[in-house]
Structures are given as C-alpha cells and as structure tokens.
Length: 201
Image (tube, rainbow, N blue to C red):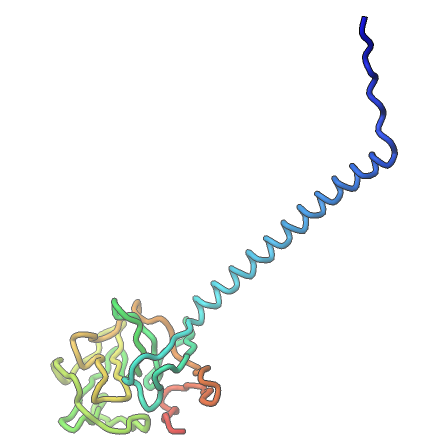
C-alpha cells in the first residue's frame, strides 16, 4: 500500500506573515473607504458651491463699459434682487447678463433719446456711457407684471434685452443669480453692487 504525506503545520513565521497580510488588507480597505467618503463629501461641497455661486464668463459688449469681453464673474443664488443689480439669467438658448431696471408693478418708459424713466422718474444711470433706444419693439410705457423683471444692458446701442420681444421680461424662474463679483482679470477685481457700480476705472 502507498503512503500518504501528512501535512506539515505552518511555521510561526508563516503564521505571522498571514496575520500581517490580513491586517494590511483590512487597513487598506479601511483607508480606501475613508478616502472615498472624503472624496464624496468634497464632490458634494463643490457641487453645492457651484450651484449656489455660478461662475460666468462675459461674451460680447452688451454690458460695457461695466463688464468687458472675457471678464469672469461670480453670481449668487438665493439673495434678493433690486433695481441696479446685475443679474445672470437663462433666455432659453444662452446665459445672459443684464442690469435690472425695474421690478413688479413698475412702469418703464424710454424716450426718443434713450432716457429711461421708471414710474415717471428719470433714472440716474452713471453706468451708461451713451443713451440709445436700441432694439426696441415692445409697447411703451411697459408695466412690469408680478414675478417679472425689466432688464437692460449698459451698452444700450447694441444690447438685446427687455426692450425686445426676443428677450422680453424676465421671470423668476429664468434668474440664475445676482452677479456680485468680477474675479478676472486680477487687475479688475471688483465688487459689483448694483447701481453704485459705474463701470469707470
């Protein structure tokens, strides 16, 4: 009859290596779980910041001289809007940036020379370098209905805004945030605070 070899008991060194291997695997799994958890928290934080503070790049000259082509802006959601504030909004095809001229219940009129009145009072628009009626095909005077805003670009001759049916009055749902800061270029870092901003350097 054949003989069978009896299995040899593992040595102390082999047992120690196995214990170390299992311990290292558990440490790796624990570290991996912590890392993935931290990355998930960071991703959630970044997503929340991007949602609450959209970052926008200016294209075109409709808001000059206040804003220039290539300027990078930060907008904030969830803060109130008022006359003179700069708002970012979605017109259905593009994200645009314009200045709020009037809100719900206000009556807007624009003279032949481009001068704007709200509720019969002429606006003091230091941020506008040259008045113009621009692309105007709406009926004036215009009463702004509830939940809406009348916006215009600072470069009145070229801006397409609430004076045109192509944009019209903004609804609350279209608004993406109030533009509060220009962060680029660095030498033009500016806090953008409504009508107080003249766009002058």
